[in-house]
Structure formats: C-alpha cells, structure tokens
Amino acid sequence: MSDVPTYRKIIHIDMDAFYASVEQMDNPALRGKPVAVGGSENRGVVSAASYEARKFGVRSAISGVLAKKYCPEIIFVRPRFDRYKEISSKIHKIFHEYTDLVEPLSLDEAYLDVTQNKKGNPSASLLAKEIRLRILNEVGLTASAGISVNKFVAKIASDVNKPNGQKTVNPDEIVPFLEELPIRKFYGVGKVTTEKMYQLGIFTGLDLKGKSLEFLEKHFGKSGAFYYKVVRGIHNSEVKSYRITKSVAAEHTFDVNLSSEIFMLEQLERIAVSLEKRLKKHNISGKTVTLKIKYSDFTQQTRSKTLPYFISDKSLIMEIVEELLYQEKMKDSVRLLGISLNNLNNEEKKAVVVQLKFAF
Image 1 (cartoon, rainbow, N blue to C red):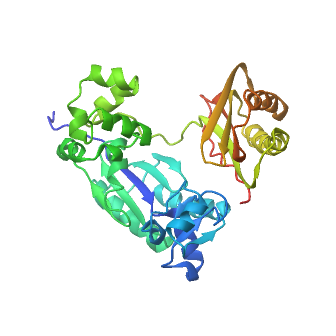
Image 2 (cartoon, rainbow, N blue to C red):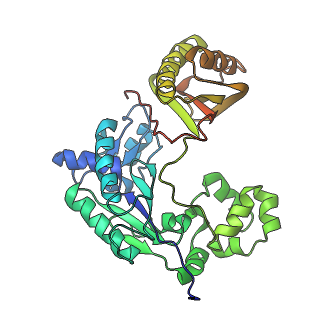
Image 3 (cartoon, helix red, strand yellow):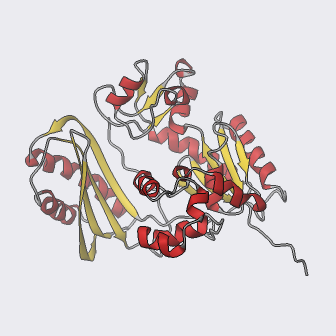
C-alpha cells in the first residue's frame, strides 16, 4: 500500500478578454485597438474590454462615459451573445474530449478535473497546454490556465500569467504561493472585504494565515472559516458537471434617465415579461424577489421580499416589484433597473444557463 498522498488534478481555463477577443477575431479592423464591448460614450456599462483598452484602465463594469475618459480612442461594440455562445460551445466541446468532469462558471471559463482523463495523460500541466493550443488552432482565441490540486488555487493561478499563459501550483508550493499573494487577489475576497481586511492589518496571505479561526469568524462571520481553510490550501469542493442556478436576473440600462415611478413601472413590466419566459421555459420558480435600482450618480440600491411560496408568473412578480418600488421615494433619476428571483426550487434540477439581454 503506497504512502504517497493522492491529489486531484484540477485545471481552470479562462479565456483571455473573451467578448472583446471574439469581436477582434471577427473584425480584423479592431485588432490591436482598444475595444469595449457594451456601453457607449454616453450611456451604458462596459461588459468587457480588450487588453489594449485595459492598459488605459478600462475594465468591465465601469460606465461607457468613464471608459471614454480613460481612453479617448476607445471603440464601443455592441455585444453579440449568440455569437459568444456559439464560440463557447466549440470550446466546451474540446474540454469534453479530455474529461466529462467539466464545470462551467460562465461562457468563458470552466473547471476541469483531469485526475482521470480520456487521454490517459498523468500530467495536468501538459493537458492544459494541449487544450490551450487546440483552442487557439481550432477556435482562433487564446486562453490562460491555472493548474493545482483544488479549484480555489487553480482559479487564482490562471490569472498569474495572463494573457495566453498558464501557471501550475504543485502541492508543496501551495502554502508559499498563497502566503505571498496580495489579499485582493484571493478568489472570493471582493472590494468591500479587501478594504475591511486592510483595516484589520491583513494585506497578504501570510497576514491572513496569522489570524486565528476565532478572529476571522468574529469579523467575517461564516466566511471566516472559509478564509481560514483556503489560505492553508484546504478547499475540498468537487468539480461538478453541472451547476445549480441560484438566481435568475434581468436588468436594463436606459438611454435616458427615468425620473418617475410610472415610467419605471413600464420598464420593469418589460423586464418581468422576459424573466417570466425564461423561468417557465426551464420550469424554475423562486421565493425571493429583488429589485435593483442604480441612480444617475451610480449609487445603487437593492430591495427584497421573500414569500412563503414559489412564484414565476409575471403578474405575481410585478406585484412584489411594485411594492418594493414604493417602499421609499426616489432619491434621484434612475439609469438602470433590474429584477432577480432567488431562493429557487431547482435544488434537485440540472442547472440552466440563464442570460437575459436587452439592446444597448
């Protein structure tokens, strides 16, 4: 009986600036130029930015106005989600030639468990290199990869040598790798949590590792135990070949700010119609309705209500949305509205990818 510990071999594949790269691939005139998918110089939000645009500070989730300010030469392109899904399907077909244990996170990234793989190759690093080369040759796009013994470390590692690179973190390298890592690069540590950790003197993985479980639970609640484990390389989540949808949402950024609840209700009705169609198509219902409001100054509010029963009907959703809308007065004109439904009834159902979209 061998005393050598056995480890899982996990690859995280992340396409490089996926939406923008697809646009540059399909339109040679955009290659080598700063491109923003989504938004415009007057309205909207950037969905993705090319690496040429990122050099100027343009990134996803910033406004089109800010993107234009950062990079006056920016080229705005309307998103083509059908095309992105088509390309994503080709990429995932390649993944499944290596393993059936493929867990998609989005159209442009996925985890692959290649511990036992269809190629019989014991080297996850070589498999990752081969997969990336095939994506380049067969699809025309570059991808980056992270390779390690668990999903958490693989996810972080895939960002180290971007774009068009890969990073392997072997078992004996995990703890030193995480100790040197800036806390803002830890997967699952967002902007707000990063600021809180800074205030507590936590700037690197080593700083985080120096805090006790009790300290972390006191300041971060249930997440404290997660941080305590992952900084020690402990993350046992398996790669699942499907993911349970936890929330279904739709939102829309308006060309002209809305200044009246009446106009807002008209737009929310449109959003609820699209939401209902997707919910019923996949036979999903939920108990918690959330209304998202983003004002003209970019401040954001969410208001939620949880029911004792599941709903998916547009009229029932709108009853709750209207109630949430009138909970308090508008503080300013509104540039974005969204509705989401969670607490879903799909715990035993196969996940579906739900991505609602509106014209920019």
